Length: 276
Image 1 (cartoon, rainbow, N blue to C red):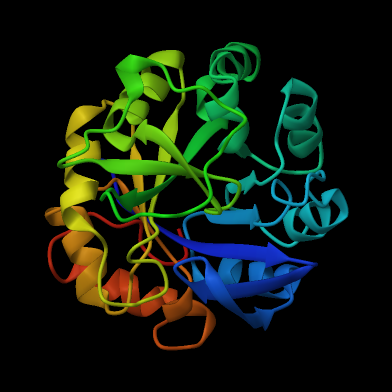
Image 2: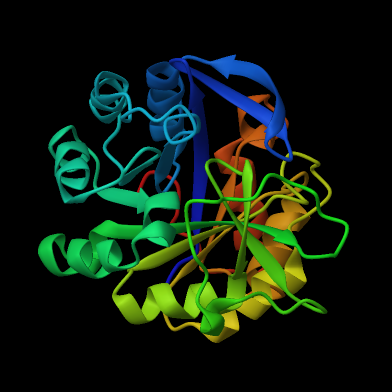
């Protein structure tokens, strides 16, 4: 049986780890390299580093910060934010990343997923999907730089819509349809974040998570909403997630990685033991 993974997330802005609510109202959570070292010793299974303003600021990911973080960890490191082309993927891998997360650039150029997975291997390519429940009242800024093909358009009645540029711009792309598309293009994993739940600590969007997980054959990482250890259990058992990503509950000391692993193991969920 494959073990489920516990993954802390380092959202980085201007060289500092931050955490917000629904992608806004950010508060400082510490130095990325120090937190990375801490989580490595705590027994995290992997670590995700997201430069959350690289795309919206139209700049490259902070390579030096990535290098500093990678030097502190001996667990798989995924890096995302501002990855636009194959050369960016290469640069992040050379800086110490084990996987690279594509988001906005993949939506604008889906062929990037196929090219990157064929060149570096699908195990290196994660596609991040930032999702919000669709309704006619959404007035968020439209991503004018992309055209949505008919096969990917969001279901106006029941769908979740994909956002770009760190959750700033709405698209007309349906989340489940996009998840299936990226899997077909060769992505090795999906990082699925519910913008509605992010930072609220009231639980993952289990309906969204289950829909996406059941629609693809590649692993799905649950993100957005963890507030209790029971929420992690629900994401795995109800949402069918292969991994759970969390930030607030770990950054601010509500729970430790050990707490999470013990809780899940005691409920017969296959978890890699601490120290392994």
